Image 1: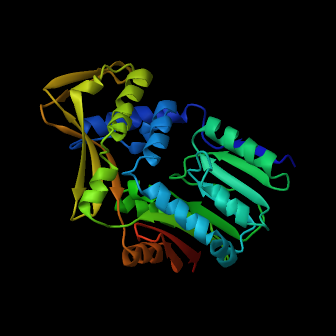
Image 2: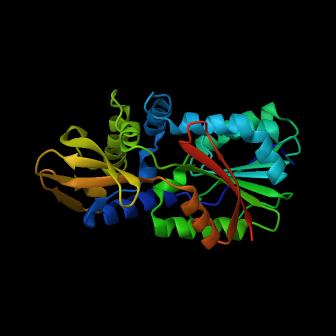
Length: 320
């Protein structure tokens, strides 16, 4: 078996079809919304990498701190021979786990980006000749079929990305992960924690305006892919803390009354002055709530680690 394999489980046209469906549904609904996954074209991914280095944006540093300090404990608790990473991207943070998992047989990165999977997967296979890398081009929010690999399996979902899912979506996602797990398998989950509102808002509205550019990038994506005529300068970046739901909302606020045409959808969308388009929800968590959501999906919270300032948590849960 080759040390690097790439399997596509998404149809070739799946991304374009999903974009068209999401834009039509989101821009004709009330309130208007767009899923955050459409931030991440090549430019959006570059901007997000810049965000992770900003002084205001703590989650990446906090999670990296936990992985550096606790990788050995994670490995000991999981005993994994296969590591499955959902939304793997560049697999950069995963290297802490890969370095600690001396008995690892197979790494299965899962992402919608073929280029990211190929680049990261081939590099890892070259660096670690004894490691099988079987990359999957797939949407991790849909039903997954994993390759046959040795157990136990450790499924990792890092970065606090689970916070981008609404509660009903999180429940469905965790249930789908549970369905992948056999006895002895585990889930390693990254969750951003509830904290002071000012810290949270600054993390999504930095002084340099990088997050604003990242937020508006979704408009560039729709313009390029669907022939739309969004003027990104006609929208303002907004980040708000919803204390009741305990999540950050990123929005684009129309500066004026305007009409946007989207020829690929034969659609014209009227925005009122001051009307918001929600582009991201980023939920923040407490340990008790994480435990409840895991339990509802048939998973038992076994270990909980935080960074020194208790801003971010990694949890290990096992199939019940």
